[in-house]
Amino acid sequence: MFEKVKALLIEELSIKAEDITPSAELSSDLGINSLDLADLILQCEERFGIVIDDEDVHTLITVGDIVEYLEKQI
Image (tube, rainbow, N blue to C red; front, side, top):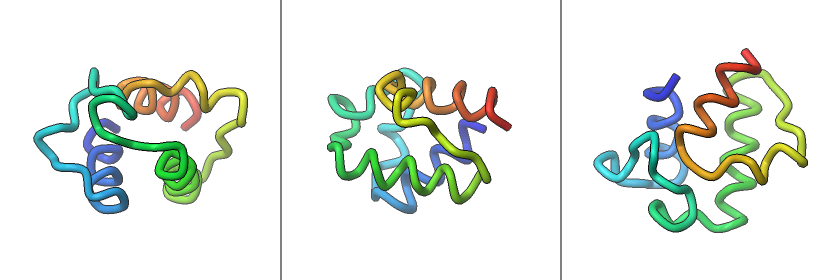
C-alpha cells in the first residue's frame, strides 16, 4: 500500500520520490497545503473505492498515517 500511496503523491502532487517515506509529514516535510490535501483525499477515495470521513482527515499527519488508514478501510 505504501508504494501505491507513494505513486499517487508523485503523479498527482509532483512530490519527489526520495522525499516520500512513511514518517514524512504531509505539510512540513512534503509541502502539502490544505488544497493539496483535499485533492489527495479525493484521489485516494477514487483510486481505492472508499470514503474518507471529514473527521478522519485531521488524523492523517504522515504518509504512514495515510497508508495505515487505507489498509484499515480496504
